[in-house]
Amino acid sequence: MRPLSPGAASFFQSFRATRKGELHLHLEGSISTGTLVRLSTRFRNPAFPSAEEVSRRKRLHGPSSFLELYRDVCRCLKSSADYAEVARDLAQRLRRERIAYAEVYVSPAVVERIGLSWSEVQGALETVFAGHEAAGAGRIVVLLDSVRQWGPETAERVLDLHESSPWPRVAGFGLGGDETALPAREFRRVFDRVRSLALAPLIHAGEWGGADGVAEAVEVLKPVRIAHGIRAVEDAAVVRLLARRHLPLDICIASNVATGAVLDGRNHPVLRLLRSGVPVSLSTDDPGLFGTTLRGEFVRLALLGASGRELRTVLAASRRGALRPFSPPGPARRSRGTFPPSPRR
Ligand SMILES: [Zn+2]
Image (cartoon, rainbow, N blue to C red; front, top):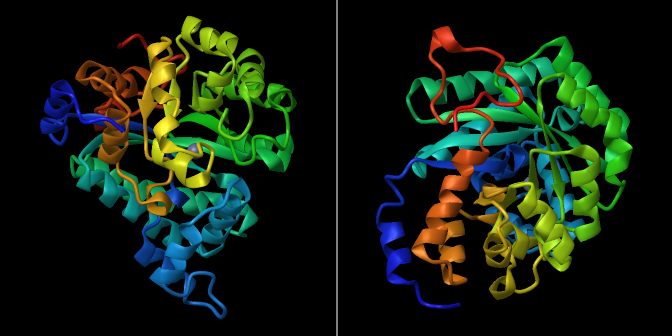
């Protein structure tokens, strides 16, 4: 790691007051340790009996231990009120960091898997998110999420739920989970439907899977952004493809290091991608589980050698890549929104 350049140091002086956005953030992964222990210890044989146990589980050994941790966190959520509590953790963190705009992945597939009603959970989340906006704390946009290893049928079910009861706060649909489980082409029809529902298509790729998986996702599913995408760096042709199409990567450095997707943080490819002309934004991914902040993500980027100008470019990328304007609509302007987004950039 290198010392901060003068330009980078001045970037951080104004960081707190700057209007910032986050485009890659998961609701369940935003749970605080206190909430996790409290929700878990309501039951016999809790998965997270203490803060010490949470810390132990956060020491990951690759993708399977992360997916198991995430699964066990979700299993602690037993009601729409529990979801609201996690949403309050998330909103509190956004306020603390003065994040003006956040796109948050919420997974109706997980909600139904744990036996809850999506419409009740949606209602509980809407109350928290609307309250956050009404207090002037920033805008929250929802990205519906499906779990890749649960297949296209589950993704279709998520879209059924949205179609039968559209939630105006939803602007996009993404695919997360184990990206090595099924190839992107299995979801071609799902993503055609995503577009027909005026939702922005998004996908997690190039975190655990290689550059070929990124290329396939780009060519077959035509996402508007890619979550992670870092392993594109392994193939210069895929990097050129992303740069040529101005396809943004929503990168989370601390997450990549914590899960072992990048073994040594000093070699994280974020700067190489940025300097190759790929649009890059930074986010926290699962801030409750990785103990990271948006400022922390930018500090990591600066320590990798980013100049003040490069830090500002990455900061601006979240606004350029956002599916909606940073400011919440007034009551009269509240609408479903459109995709592609209206020309406002
Ligand atoms: Zn993610």
